[in-house]
Image 1 (cartoon, rainbow, N blue to C red):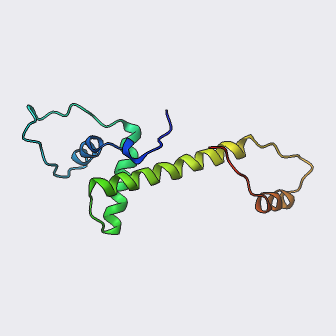
Image 2 (cartoon, one colour):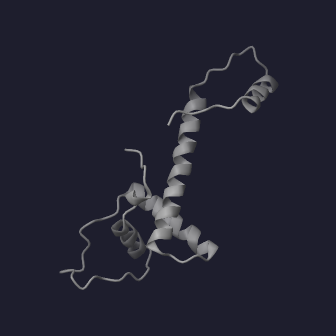
Image 3 (cartoon, rainbow, N blue to C red):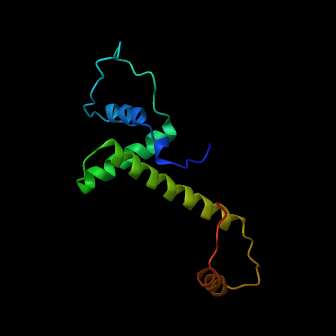
Length: 116
């Protein structure tokens, strides 16, 4: 999966599709010839969009497309960063001669910078 670099990757058509799946009323364009959607939201994007909608509802914020895009992008960035951290720490090999206390001190004292 390609990395997402812009919140515009969460297209308004994707948001409308997810909103319909969740049971929200979505305006239908008068120019639409039939009621079927041409563009369906991929599952990868749908996960972040539905989480963003739930978060905005809990916070009492309006469910505008812009708010949903921004929140979904922030959620993606957070999980993407967590994946990088986990990948880095899973690749580090620790000497068996170090005690658990020593390992905790090393992890807490050093700042690990990740490549983007």
